[in-house]
Length: 396
Image (cartoon, rainbow, N blue to C red; front, side, top):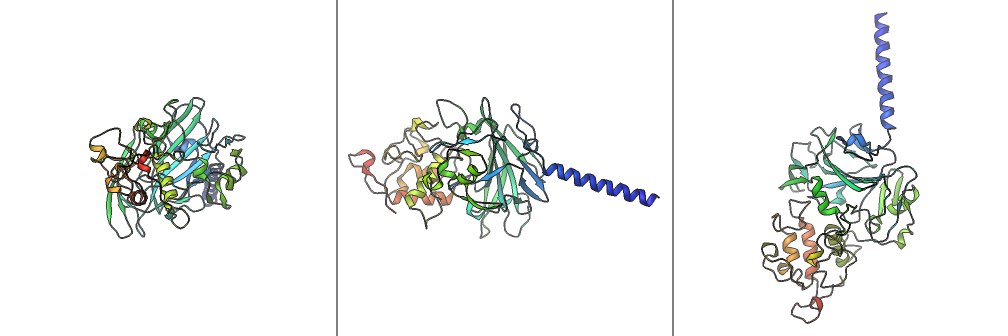
C-alpha cells in the first residue's frame, strides 16, 4: 500500500506541474494603469521556458532597418496592445499607439563562439549576426542585460528599466539605473572593455523627449520608415507593416511599397552611401537633433526630413566652442572628416565630448567609418558664398 500511495503522490505532483506549466503558457499580458511593478514578470510580456526567453500570447516582435547603436548590444523589440485596440499609421512620426500599449526592448549580447558565460565576456557582433530564432532566444547562447518597457498610460508614456539577474531567471526594476562592466570580444579574440549603462528613469527622457514643446516621452523606433522591412516570424517571413495590419495592431497603413523606408546602414549592395549615412544619423541622432528635439538650439538637424545643407551641418559653425569641437571650424567640412566636428564627437568615448551623449561607452567603429566615408564623398568648399558652402551629397 505504501508503494502505491507513493506512486499516487508522484503522479499527483506530476499532474500539478503539468497544469501549472499549462497555466503559465496561457498567461495573459498584464497592463498596469498606474504604479511601477517591481518585477518584469509581473507584466507577463516575456517568459522563460525550457531554457529560452520567449514571448507571451499577443506580443509581436519587430526590428528596425537601421537600429540605434548601444555598445554593440543586440535587441529583442516587441509590441503588445489590449484586445481590440490598434495603432494609427503616421507616415513620418512614430505610430500613434493607444492607451494600454506596452513596448519592450530587451538588450542582450551573444556569447563568444564556443564559450559559456564567464561573468563578463560577450561577443562584439553587428545586428545582422542575430541569434534570434523563432521569436525566441536560447539563454545558453546569450547574456541578457536589461529589458526596458515603454508603457502608454492615460497621462502619457512611462519608461521603466528592468535589469536581469546573474542566473537569467528574473529582471527587477532599477529606477536609478545600473552600471555593468563587460568585455566585448571580436572574432579575432581582441577585447574592449565596455561600461554598459542602464539608464535611470530621468535619463530615458534624454532620448524619448523628442518634442520640446510637449515635454512628453514618446517612442523612437516604431516609425513607418524604420519598420518597413521583412521579419522572420514563427509562421514565416512577412513585411512588418503588413503583419501589424494583418494581426489588427495597425490601421490606415498603405501597402509597404507606398510607405517610406529608410536604408539598412550596412547594406552597401542595395543602398547608396548617402542613403545609408542619412539612415544612420536619423536613428542615432535625429530624435534629438531635429526641429522639435532637445538639441534644437544647436541648429544641427540630422533627422530624415531635413535636407537643408546648412542645417545638416555643412559648413555650419558649432554653437558651443571648447573641448567638444576639437578646435574644428565646422560641424561638417565637405570632403574632410578629420576637420569635421561631427566625426570628432562620434569618434570619442570621452563623456565631455562624445555624441550621442547617452547610450554608449565605446566608439561605434563601423558607424564612424560610414559617416567619415559619407563626409569624404561630399563636394563643396566652406570658403564659398552659398549656404553650406554649396556642399552637395555625392551620388554614390
